[in-house]
Image 1 (tube, one colour):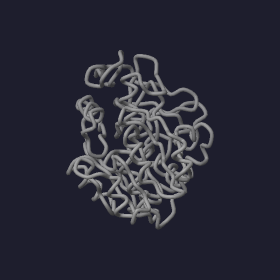
Image 2 (cartoon, helix red, strand yellow; image 1 turned 135 degrees about the vertical axis):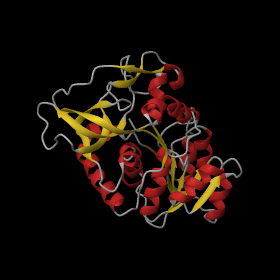
Image 3 (cartoon, one colour; image 1 turned 90 degrees about the vertical axis):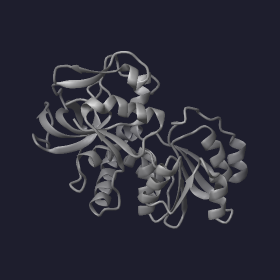
Image 4 (cartoon, one colour; image 1 turned 60 degrees about the horizontal axis):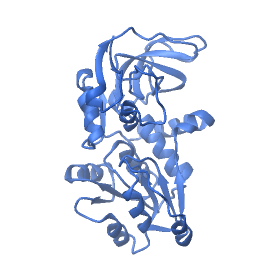
Length: 327
């Protein structure tokens, strides 16, 4: 089969190589799927660079999230069989940027019928992150104001839709007219183009000076520092990631005097410590998808040959929505 392999670390355009390798075989508790769609995530970029907390041994095939059709199951796998359309995370080093991939049965879920292959490929990580962040960690309530950074990106676009579905008033921050238009189409009630407008002033204007009840920040750095200037009394500032490349230092005295919470989210820990909660979340997301409340913003559907350049566009921060590889 054909697969993208990383044999040395660096930028995706420099280290990804499309090669012929043997098809994977399932071990106990695993399954092999024919890849129908594999969504590119920023952790894939970080793995290529060697900067992610998970560091697969070289060489490896990235692609942590996918939708596929089951072709073989390993010992002990029940309830799944050939032809089932599934989604979830890949079992590295045999990731989704290939014609076939490995998955752990415990981290595999039925693909919602309402979503096509590309939409289902990107549902798992971004929307689970959004759901756990907004509902489990931040306790978002209907009528509250939610500020979402990188609102046209993979993780941010999911948070916009989930916040709207929860009855919150959503303010989306995006960079440039195309991304601002995408955030508006996703359902953000107010959109701030950060290249043209100060989001701190915009949030204060929209809330009468009160600030946002929940701030969803996958960017970090200066974005986090400035977000703290427009957080409401008893607000919750969600630390999702550091796509901006800078991990901020947190002045805890500021959280004390303004009476807000700084809440971290590492979604992957739920798969380790509370898999039942992950499955319950999948059921909730499937129900939202079935009634049309959420639908993945797919910006690019690229063939297997086009994956390297799509990954680099993601790394450079110029994509709108998800880049999905369609082998």
